[in-house]
Image (cartoon, rainbow, N blue to C red; front, side, top):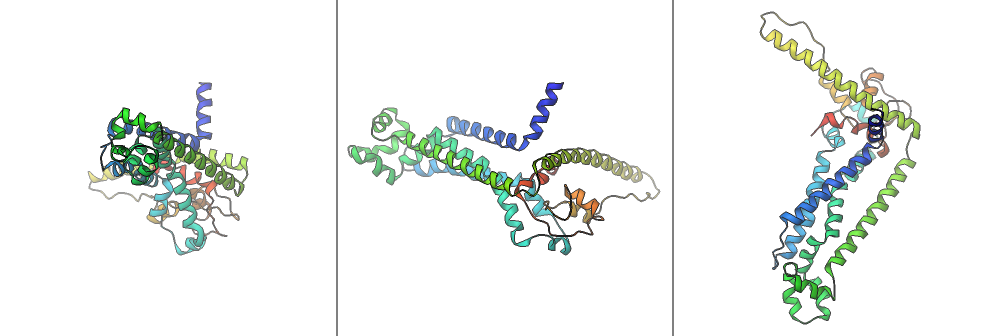
Length: 310
């Protein structure tokens, strides 16, 4: 039991990294299935279009799914706030900061797909074998028949070996794949360092913050289920009774809207979530200072991702 608790604590502390790792592994597995089962290069004039479709189209779909499954997108889209709350945000950089954070998260899966596809080389070889530019490069030192037979190379192992002695498309694809991985890791490291460097809170406060959000999420789910069950029981009961029901308080549309918006950090206040801010500011009616979006605090919105759904 103690070991299980240790594993759970580790998963909670590193849930974002584990989440990205899971997405990357699933994407890599999907690429392997596509390349080995679904993908069949036509070995004709359609090579370039067919290969590029498998290389680019799934990456684009994964990018859109990354947006669709991101909690902050739906908080941004469905959130409603008064003019007073609008003024409390830095409007010039608010949407830019949120969209930058969301885009960075959404790019994990498509970049993984592209990198893994380039390393496996099957999509690239098919697309390159039908390209006139690649044909000039590969067939420069070979007989003229190469220009006509290059498109058939993905389907002909003997031809592939013969052309590969002079210029390997597989090696070219893998070099581009490793270069892409190196660039992604470098950019990710730099942006992460800059994000934490500009963090408005320290390491231990952020650690406490994540613990608080975990507990808030659990309590919210329990309270929401209990409140919904009581409301449902009350409505069904009086549906079958001729008497009028007693008043039953439930949060108004305005109350839900005030907590359904991306979190903004305020240096003059100390709120750990939109619910915390709502409760401490007289149900969201009083607030001082200007809220700012910090990418390093994106975990505040993501904490309720399991409840927000799609």
